[in-house]
Amino acid sequence: MLDIVRRFIEEHALFSIENDAVLVAVSGGLDSVVLLDMLHRMGVQVAVAHCHFGLRGEDADADEQFVRKLAKQYGLPYFAEFFQTKEFAEQEGISTQMAARFLRYRWFEQVRQTQGLACIATAHHQRDEAETMLLNLTHGTGLAGLHGIQVKNGHVVRPLLGVGRDDLHDYLVERGLRWREDDSNDSPVYQRNLLRIEVLPVLREINPNLDQTMHGTAERVGGAEEIVRRYVADTTAQARRDDAEVTYLNIATLQKTAATALVLHEMLRPFGFSWPVVKDIVAAFPGESGRRFDSPTHRLVKDRENLVITPRRLTQFGTFQLTAGQTDLLADGMRLKTELHEDAKHFIIPRSKSTAALDADKIKFPLTLRKWQDGDWFMPLGMKGKKLLSDFLIDQKVPLNLKDEVRVLTSADGKICWVVGWRVDDRFKVEDTTERVLTVQRM
Image 1 (spheres, rainbow, N blue to C red):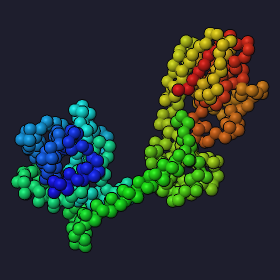
Image 2 (image 1 turned 90 degrees about the vertical axis):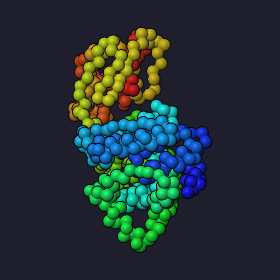
Image 3 (image 1 turned 180 degrees about the vertical axis):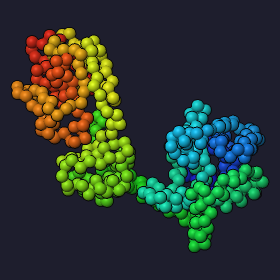
């Protein structure tokens, strides 16, 4: 069995057995005790990490003492952390299990970095993988959930995913190893335990080799996911364009893809859009512009040729003032930087829409940065007449969600100097007679 695990580590390039130092997560249970013993016997440089979640009273205290003695027995560095898990879960509004997972992996990574270790090894095995796959399938999942537990995820590696729980038990008995039993693993209160106790035994009556079968399925699904990932990456390269905090996805390109909703769902995953919402977005492709869809963090608008994605603003943008001589303004996530150029004759007007070049002597301070309003008008650069800002935005084909983000910079007399990121007012432009130039850049 040692050779099987060694080959698995090498086949998946989890780490260098000869050269890398590994942090092993050890709870004191059967699985982690076996993992620690195996890596130690292979000659891997190992450090031990144990989490005390403050949930099981004296049993948890005994687990920590057991793992501490185990690390001392092997002569290995030992790290332990005591968490206030329930308090953290209540504070964040999440389940105790989710809180424990977040806390342990965050701490593991902190230890890995501070100690200069190559990776973090956990003792997940084939039965854990089968449980995860079925649990994900029960709740609803895509390909990522069907490949179960990843062999390698960032700096976290799972050297035992190639072996079953029974194999680990046989190894432990053969080696005469001691371990600690966690009574909470038998509590049906937790969904995973209910699945393990009530559901999986029935499935194993149908297929005694269920864990190995599920592992093989996970490998094939993982391969299929890689194919999809590459296809999505190619489509993204063709369809996506980013501009500051705005992302554009070309609808015509998306419509040419196979399984459009699936591809779009993968592309929108970083923006938090759910599968049902993505299907509604695809259904809206032939419809009129202006349809709006929200995720917890972003807003997507179906515009003429594109899907336009912007962050959702959780706070109302207020009114901010920029005084004479002030070089930096931070306003609800928007940052403006100013610079005064005393010699206008040698000044070169920047071509970027993110920078306005204004005649400094025509400006009256303080300048005001605010949201645009109905009835606002200005004289777009190159025009001599007035134009309603609402009409200007329509002419520029500004999507609905970007209209909400448009800000104007006004002089103290109320005149709009700059529609930020779009157009300078002609009355404040730099001319041959200009002596000083004020540049305002949106960072």
